Structure formats: structure tokens, C-alpha cells
Amino acid sequence: MTGLEEAVAVISEGKRFLLTCHVMPDADAVGSMLGLAAILQSMGKEVILYNRDAVPEALSFLPNVDTVRTAPPAGMRFDATLITDTAARNLLPRSFPQPAISGPRIIIDHHVAHDDFGDIIVRDTDACATAIVVLNLAEKLGVNPIPENAAEPLYAAIVADTGGFRYPGTTSATLRLAADLLDAGVDPWRVASRVFESWPMERLRLLGLTINSIETEFAGRVAVLCVPTDMLVRAGASERMVEGLVEYGRMIRGVEVSVMLWVRSPRSDETGYGEQLTRLSMRSAGRVDVAKIAVAVGGGGHRAAAGATLDCGIEEARKRVLSELGRVFGQPL
Ligand SMILES: [Mn+2]
Image (cartoon, rainbow, N blue to C red; front, top):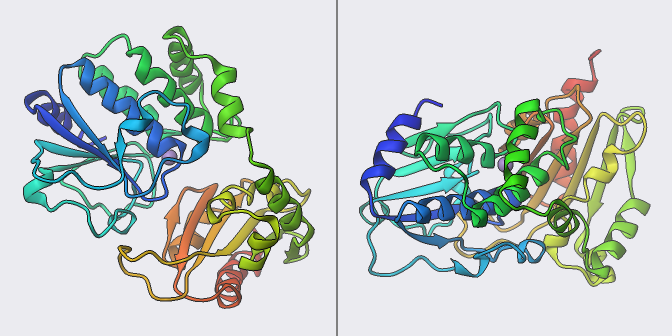
């Protein structure tokens, strides 16, 4: 974590900070941002929270979630901007404040594939969640114990990014830090039931349709889940409800990689994309590094979970991804 000392210095000296995370934020992005905000507030700092997209409904139970603005604040300058869980510049909206407003940009992240944007980078690729990096930063800032309103969002982030302490990134240190958060007052079932369950009926219907259409490739080693727009319409589901359904492909015995593709409507302020967009999400059962596949088609992520946005329709995207997977499955693993 090369930038840790620099980040501590900038945060200690500054008074007012902008906190943000990647568009379409997930539990680790939001939880790390909310946790960091509460930590800075406990130090007497002023914080403004911003994300272009609304926080997902499943995370609406987290404390202070209603303080996240969906438009950048006007007429304010910041001593620094802290950006959680964000591996690339194009994961921030075009409307993101210029350096004169934002101050130095401090990246707090755990992704292996990173485009190294930002002025100060605090990145621990061994951390199972960005929330772990936030907890290490809090310790260096002398914030101990963790404030109660920081504990729940950070716990939610860790629970989500480890799949409930199941994924390979989970270590004894993860469990010790999680235990500290329980001591700070977190109710584990309240968090787990909201993060993993509490699905709207439409999402369950969409899961049914998606599972019914699963195909396998490479002699059953790759599962492909395609979610065209008409499937969303039939289920009455929204685009955001697709996120995460890729996990079900990985559950099939013998599947090494689960691939999910769905059409995504472009947004006016998105950087670098054309008219037709297909979203790709991949999960590995362990042996295959899906981050490499994602990078090859213009995305990024982790060894076991990665994704990309492709500048084409769903059929063309399927071809491109399967051709990259052919480099892996065309030869012995
Ligand atoms: Mn993360």
C-alpha cells in the first residue's frame, strides 16, 4: 500500500472531503464510502458523499445512506477526494469534478487490474474487500475503536465481497476484523439477510428465466447465461436486477467459468462507449483467472470475479468472450 502514508498526511491536514465510488455502486463501493465517511466525521472532518447512480435498494438499510448525493455539489472545493473500490477512470462519470474542485484524488482500492488513475493510490490487492483497506487506513489515522455507524457499512462490504466469508480471499485476518465490527455493534443477520436475500419477486422470476436458458460450452466447463431485454420485460425486472445472477452458472458441477451477458442501455454522461452496449460478468470456480479474460475485452476485476462493458450487441459479445476463453480451454489447464 504505497500511498498509505501520503493519504494519512493529506487526510490529517484537510478539513473538507468529497467521497465517491464507481458508477452502479455495489456493497463494497458504498459500504467502504459510508464507513470512511463516518471515520472522517469522528475525526471532526466535513464530508460530502456523491455517486451519479442511486445506492441499490438492497443497501438502503445502511446508516446515512440518504446523505449520498446523485449530483456533484456546486460551489464547493475540497481538500481531497477519496474514491473507494474504483479500478479505472472510466468507472467515474464524465460530470466528475475537475482537479481544481476535487483536490488531490486518493484511490482506496483492492483490484488487481487498475489503470492507476489518481494522485495518491492506497491499494492492497491481497485485501478481500476495499473495506479492509479502509479499516487499515482508520488504524493509521488513529481512529480506534471504529465508530458504530462505520462498522455496519464496512461489515456489509466485507460480507458481500467475500460471498459471506466463502470466497478464497477470506483469511483469518478477515474474520478477526469482522469480529471487531461485531464487537462494535453490528447485527450479522440484519446485514446478511439484506445483502443476500430480500429479493423483489421480479428478480426471482428473472432468475428462473435465466436458469432455464443456460447453455454450456467447452464440454461443460463454461456456462453461458444470456439475458436479452425481452427476458427482463417478461420478468418485469430492471437492468440492475441482473447483477449477480452469474453466480448460478458457477454452481453447476464441472463448470470452471460462468459467463453472463446482458444488454445495457448507455447513459448520456458515460465516457468512452458507443451506441450498443453489452455488459459482461464472469465468475471463476478457482483455476481460471477471469480478470485476464475481462482485460482482453476491455474490462477488469479480480481473479475469481471480473467484468467488462462491450461496445457491441449481445451475440457479438458472446463470440468475443468465447474466443478469449478458447485460449484458455483450447489447451490443457
Ligand atoms: Mn470490492
